[in-house]
Image 1: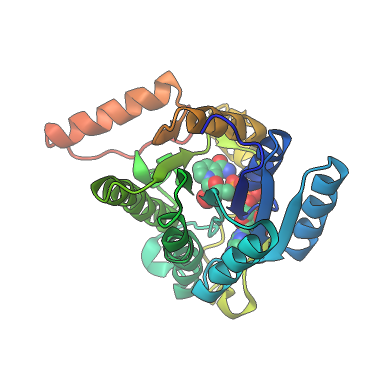
Image 2 (image 1 turned 120 degrees about the horizontal axis):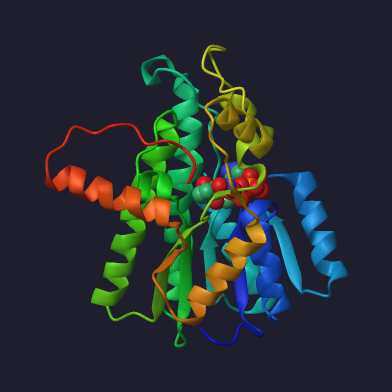
Length: 293
Ligand SMILES: NC(=O)c1ccc[n+]([C@@H]2O[C@H](COP(=O)([O-])OP(=O)(O)OC[C@H]3O[C@@H](n4cnc5c(N)ncnc54)[C@H](O)[C@@H]3O)[C@@H](O)[C@H]2O)c1
């Protein structure tokens, strides 16, 4: 897609972080923006800010964990703008994990799987039937993570599990639209190359009442990127960060080339991915990755 002008882009989790940056980057290229999110205050803010920039937008409540809520967002987008050309299944949370996974609250597992995994499945089920019947080429973009898709970082096993699953689903979606010769381009978006300075580390702000932690023992104590930096510094690691606007710019550049991999890495990450492949091919016992790089 070379020209985003007049295209309708639906972004789940668009009220903050990567999704918010995508909304502005696409809006500034003339796209009409539909944001679905659960954070009422952030939704109001993004709606006001988009309007202030003269970007045509619809901001609506959408809880991605519910299929009907995704379908209602798709209906609202079609009703307001007459069609949908780009979908970003982007909403995600960090469960604030720490310690032994067998001690985790079951509700940590449920919340993270509900949003990160079922959120993507629900978006596919709600939006793909609409995209595949259009005559023009459309795009379906899934926000994954290198943590799970490319590498297995220790200490966040739930998040890592969701992103591993999400990547296989995204790749299979790509294979299925190709096999069916369907007019949808599928892309896997990896925010980075460093940890992206967003609200992800403070996801507890949108944690549903019914899924609050049952045990107090496994809270990570991290609620911002600054907390992450401090923790890394204690281990002598300087944690670099990426602004979400850079992620949006990288994503748009890739979409202009119909790229599957919307992925920017560092030489350090590339070396880790190669080492992981070698580890598998040479049957070496895994050793834990270090955050950073
Ligand atoms: N920040 C990073 O370093 C990083 C790295 C890799 C991948 N990601 C991924 O990027 C995506 C966006 O996260 P972010 O970093 O911008 O964090 P963020 O917290 O700033 O944004 C996530 C948005 O999702 C929304 N959300 C949460 N639960 C929802 C639900 N049930 N329904 C609808 N919306 C919901 C939040 O309200 C928020 O607006 C996520 O999928 C995340 O896993 C982030």
